[in-house]
Image 1 (cartoon, protein in one colour):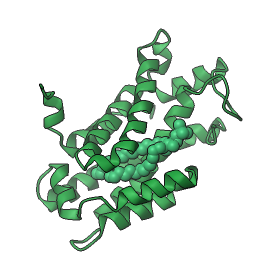
Image 2 (image 1 turned 45 degrees about the vertical axis):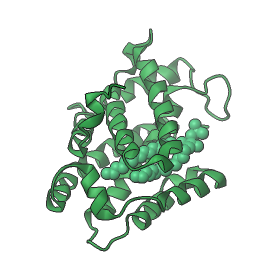
Image 3 (image 1 turned 180 degrees about the vertical axis):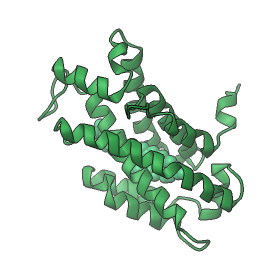
Image 4 (image 1 turned 120 degrees about the vertical axis):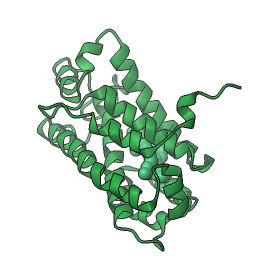
Length: 216
Ligand SMILES: CCCCCCCCCCCCC/C=C/[C@@H](O)[C@H](COP(=O)(O)O)NC(=O)CCCCCCCCCCCCCCC
């Protein structure tokens, strides 16, 4: 079976660069790059083992919903997250209080990934300040409990918590990132974390202004 070249040359640097290209000079977030960043993260997660496949399935599913919007007949409204939110709210294409006619709105779908981006930010912050004997499972669990866990049901929290214990140790984790020595990993994290934080914050502010941080 042919393996796509793209799947072989994973490096975290590329993923993080994709997030860098998300923001326009007017601080709009390009959906195409945002989605590409998530694709890369999923690829990374797939390198960590099959215990994470229930997580990557859900992420892939959400990425696909957004790609379908982007490639659909109203794709022009989905170029940035800002234009997406405006279009979907103006056209009443979002379930605001309970799930109903629009289970696949761009707004609610992106919100799930946005919350996961907060997990990523917290996790990468911990990695950046970690030392050789730091435990990746603990860092991951702490980041999760401070972010995504608050939005998940008991059963999902249980499953996620179990999967986290299967994370490889810090050294292997750094190897899979494929950016070089631990010092280089730290440098990449230092460059990129502020950008991820900015993408997160811009999205958070946009959702807060529109009162759509709790979409069902
Ligand atoms: C590196 C280890 C990966 C740790 C991932 C931490 C996140 C754990 C999330 C567990 C989600 C379980 C799957 C189901 C989720 C859904 O119920 C739930 C709600 O959706 P619904 O409202 O449509 O029902 N979905 C979500 O919250 C979206 C989850 C998206 C998770 C994407 C995680 C990607 C992680 C990428 C890891 C990359 C690490 C890079 C480090 C350098």
